[in-house]
Image (cartoon, rainbow, N blue to C red):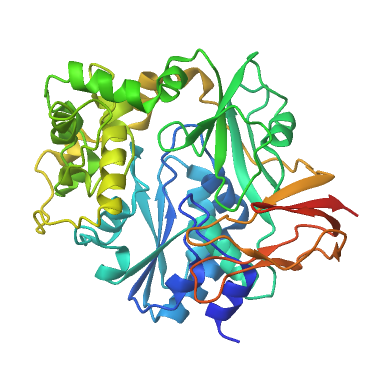
Length: 438
């Protein structure tokens, strides 16, 4: 059996947030494989913990991927500040074709376009993917899962960080389907009365107060804050109100554009022009603008750059969605040349944390051997890019640990789903498989 098939059967997806099915990437050809350990979301330490604990397994996954795609070079991109992780990875890579590339503590160093340029000097064409310049990029935890898949072990657990307003910030490994409530309890509980969670981080994550949401293959962690925290209040503001504020208040200062990481890398992303389009439409009406097409949704423009606390990132999100719905393709500049002031305008993580008012929560969240053993879990049928899984089980059936319970629809993009432990199927809904531990 090929590695591609083993990875497909194991349900491996991008563990850094995107969730792209990994078997598709490994079916390509490339000369370089890059492990993304940049982990630039403030307060999250999951990738550093994975590299500290599982550097050998990660390296095995990288080497397997290199063989699969025909690559001669492997690179691990990791921030120099993560000294213990750097030491573990350097030791594992010694004598191999995989090298460590140390990164500065900037946001968003984990953006694929940025990471590929930093580690190889190559610039991905506008609208392209790393494969267009001969690279395959995966999260460090994904490579650990590739190594496990090669031995027949499917993805049934997830490592994540619980940070922010909690009593004991920590990184832990839990079964897929575990509720965020149980993860929060494992970190000692919240220290605020009305907690709201930023799942995936403050910058690019999803904001919710639903503590019963399930951990999925892409959950890198969550940050707990009070509902009246200023950033949470901003994130919870309705889209119509955001547009109205932008329509009336944007003075076209260009800070959002001048500090945009993609703009500084040389791509035609100009959030101020997207904001300008709000002034020419009825509030809340369609206002798609091609200057949003290359936006990576990092959120710096909204949460760091804008002096008036407007919402250029959200305007770009809306523009991209409208362009996709209208089948509008990028027709702007295709040449890419980094801005001469790029290095001087990069955003340090510490400056970002101060702006977000979360510096007081900047405590180590080391991995702890915390046992989280839920008696009942809800496995979402959709945990990756592409289509939802089709259930392979029915209510009342007994399933073994690691048994496939969800399959990829025929000819669709997706990832298989497996039971994290021996259980009885309590219910199968349109969106979840509910399991009770045996």
